[in-house]
Image (cartoon, rainbow, N blue to C red; front, side, top):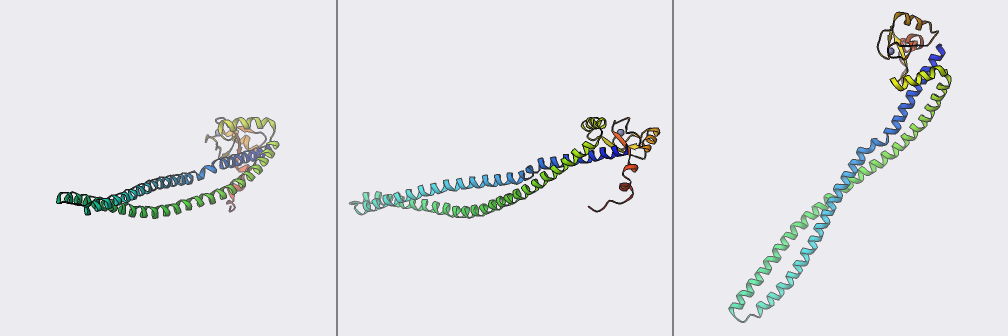
Length: 247
Ligand SMILES: [Zn+2]
């Protein structure tokens, strides 16, 4: 029975290893999600800024065209002014020239301001562009590293599954059924007993049962949690006496 207990424990350990590796393989790709979200957010901000800048550029062109047209109108007004024949015409033409000049200079002043802002925005955008590129290459590098990690996990998982299958083959069918139903119901099926206490549910076993366990002639279950139990010191003396070897 000692051998069967050892096989059951091996099965339990290899089952846990398989589950652990399966969980790692599933959760690994999601680990880069925060970085992906950051990148999408930065890219979105950049796109918005670029669109705004394009709008401003369109506006600037329109303003420049307006100024050009106003300059033409100013020339016309100036010729009109030169051709004035009396003081009434002269006054009106002068006001028109003045108005046009003022309008042009106002528009030019505004255009100058906007152009300066645009230059600053362009510089900022370039800097942001570099930041985004930095995040993007970080993500690419991380994805490459992750793909290597995932391959390693998959290799280890295949090995762990093979070990688990071997362990299952060693366990008697009668115990396997019990093991499977306990593992499904309780998370794990085999629990050590330390100083008479089941480590699966922390109940003190009846002393008689503890004595039966000492003989290792049968495989017993805990009266409370139903797990397959064994006396820890009989199967894992090294773990309790000697310090763990360095990992
Ligand atoms: Zn128990």
